[in-house]
Image 1: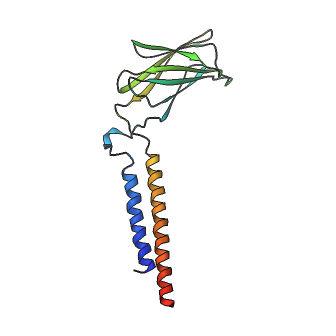
Image 2: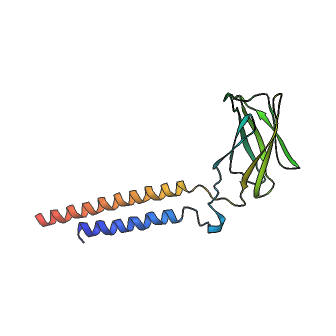
Length: 187
């Protein structure tokens, strides 16, 4: 087999191997079109809301039901863009699940540990109370998946690195065979 044909065969093999790493990226999980995009554990989610005077940014990792999920709430004054301090922040997503957020070392940042009892789509209500504010804000669309998939990036990297290593090994082997054949012809 000539070097060109060998290289073409190796390239086809590399494409087939590379394609299989992408196909297995969801580790066998079937994702139907009507389910929407997959939800990944460890993914950082953000939601934004405002009152008349305060901007809220809520950050959390994709929650697992029956496990504590840290939720960070960032409060900023809309007029001055300064962090809002000395505010009581209470979270609830149903009448029996209420949590009070505590302030952190960073001004305007509050944190709460929330445990969602079951999978589903939640709307979190935040009660803000202080000397200059008394507001209720709703943060809709918090999804607690029944089953989420692991982040597929690592599988793609492994497949790509493995494919590259295989290509290099095969190219080196092919080159050595070509050099041996050349030496035999010379004599």
